[in-house]
Length: 581
Picture (cartoon, one colour):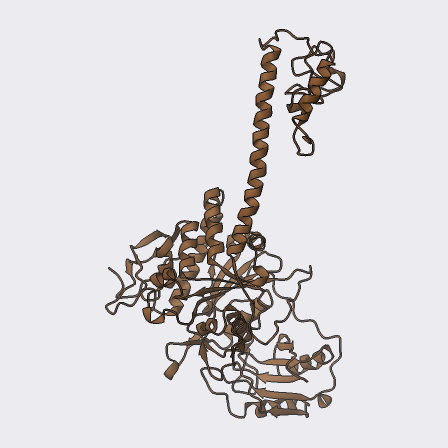
């Protein structure tokens, strides 16, 4: 009776042990543990405190003779007395209780820390334009790609940003999107592409509405420098501007400012970069980022990393294109460093990185949570380093008053955007695209097919070829398309396209393309036309025959994109004359 009472008292000290996942055998007199009384046995096959058992041959914690009975009290072979054994159990019980408190405390702290990080993220609308973005096209497995616009803001809206950015005359002014990179992850997560648009790119701005003030920024009538999009309501206008130019569906954006770059660079740790000569980005007029590095490889972080990312004077030709190339080199090197693993196994490094990232980033509302950022990181980790490709939008320099600014290069830029839209890897390692399937809807007779022909031969750098739509309509008439007429609607486009509004006219559009020797892949569905519409692009400005040179390999990244593979660690930045020491 006395023994039973003592056992009950012991059990009351460890309530719900099983529910908490603790091993009851760790506690004295719990089920499966040997009693210290003279008649106690081990129980059928039970293991206690390191003893083992199977069937009746189990050994009790105090040692067994193989008969299933525990040895009686008294000295054990190891010299320990029962009193010593009970003392050890009390110590174990105390240690387990402390461990439980630590586990529960850590879980609570982890939850609070998660909420802390979540609350630091700044969130804004994904797009401020008035055109809804198209849905992604799924691949044969039902998978869809992922597109994220990365934006670097030059805002001087805080003391930290003002100190890092300088240019006092811009303090408090509208921010500029000085870095714009579209990160594309393939539908099958096998490869990744990053396409940069130089900040000096001239283009048309879409209509944007500021979500906070309600101010409406009308669509621009002329060309505007792309980095001004951020000041037209926020990052959602930069997203709308990209969609207007490229037609690429954008799922998310992530924006960071000067101070954020520095804090993230510090948290990540040093990133190796290379310069071909000593460089000091500072000239007699004081222009430059202040970056100063010796020839060869240098490990940079913090403010020096920001200087590298902002340098144009001192790299290559001193243009924004040179800066873009340097940014690609840094990003590739950073990915290689992170994937070495050492920095991601250090809890302190991870915590610093988490703090820096959530404090520095502004994201769209669909990405507004630490859990979603973590899931995104898991997606990106699936892509091998050697399947990451950095590229720059192919471009040409403007003329006259727009000298020094850049424009999308006709043909090449559209080809690059097409590859991203169609989820074609920029590294050329995937199988070729399947040719477009012939429409199941038979084409009508040429004489019964109406075709509008538009002159799209103009561009931002050259005027359209006069009467080009009339000339090509005549070519169609000679092929039997007697209902082909010229449309005076201007529709500048880099590559010739045959547009159709629905599946019932797809066969007709493909037949029009074949009649003129245009690739069948140029026949595309568009909600902006009401019938078959041929837009003669800048790739066919003259002549009666569609030029073979215009029908480029649609699976090859244009050389003008300066593609750089993520695994290439041999790149070394060329230095601009006059910026060495």
